[in-house]
Length: 375
Image (cartoon, rainbow, N blue to C red; front, top):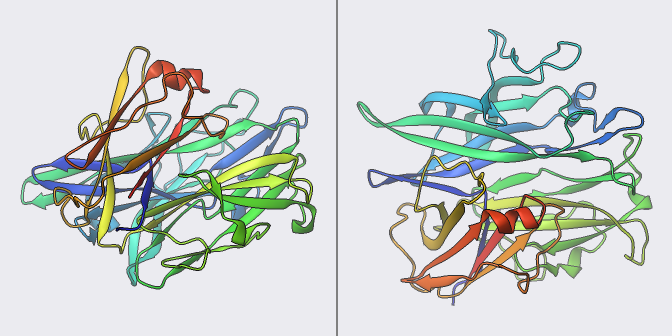
């Protein structure tokens, strides 16, 4: 029987003219920032601490081939659905802070994929997004297109959340870096780092907090790495350590005590195994390539999931017959399957289908994250 495959709701599949672009936005660093309304400090301070700045970049495939920056015929970045405009030096001109300094810097980043270095489009946050007037979830999006054949192009769009919030009463912010990572060749591993910030923005000594790691798709603890602040995710493992098939989303819970009774922060990290010959595809509203992931009052989003080869999304693997859905609310708490209106999953022709209406999302903090496991 095939091993479980999991993916999160940020996965995007664009189906057009029999060819698909698959991929998502990746984050070097962590896209989480808290704000202390008493001291008026952003934590971490992206403006004054260059090493803490997150960089976002798209990893896009056409079949099994990665698309470099030079192959995009167009590339545009958006902040909360408004296009970011840049000057000749790549600094944002329509998004500035109170000192008239730019919030964003466009450029490129070199990423190793399948043993090859690719130059990819990149956006770095160089200013603080959290402020007295901005204490909620933000979105950064990338929209680009690449040429299929002469005169014919295919578009790609993906978004990623910027988790901005007021510093909690506990006074902590937990982060895991990298927030998203890719395994692109056999035997490759990913080292994660858990860090905790205090209300003053200072990094707390690792001896003063404790962590538990969970498989977010199943909400079960990975006990072999309890209190490991720098665990490794393996491309393939059968000894109880974290391993990934297609996609693995981990939840890290931070505690102030060794008895693990006082949880003070939570963070998520996603690892994709793109060298695997199979892929768990997720499409929104029957494969709409321009779906933004935002649901308006009265609307319902229909989500399909299936397992197929990396090269051909129509080559469905009929061996996968069971699909399990796990949802988290806006506070990153698991939503019980007994909750009113919890989506039911139906499987037809080895494709899973479920619907999530606006009211369900609104009832759970106006933001939900979904994970699907197929066996």
